[in-house]
Length: 141
Image (tube, rainbow, N blue to C red; front, side):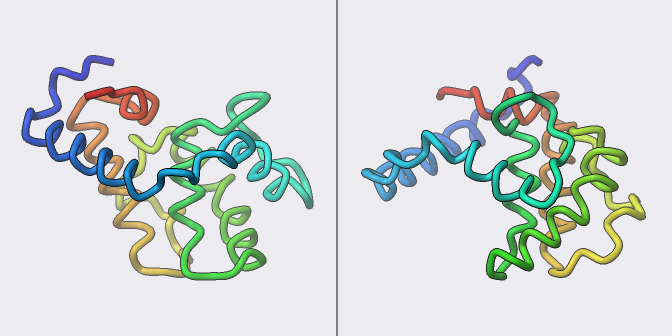
């Protein structure tokens, strides 16, 4: 996907935010090597979900999962993610955050009011920018 549609102002803001986060998270990256495997093991404990790749988590899957974490402990998080992963993320969106739109009935029942707007706002951003979550994750400013 072409990234030239992203306004320069947004690139600068993204770079500043990324640099600020990198400074605050210094030293936290040592455990990142197993995040994909640990997350999949946790979510697949009862029964495997349908992942896009045999290993790892795609940027779309990661954004969806982390949005549905919510302010809950791990058992309710697991329940919510597993409940919406199939019908909303797989079937309605086809593994693609960019396809999420507010009119989708599969959003019904999300437990926290910020979840649907966050997912839809990212979907709208991706569509209007002509970029995918994978493309967004690869932007090096």
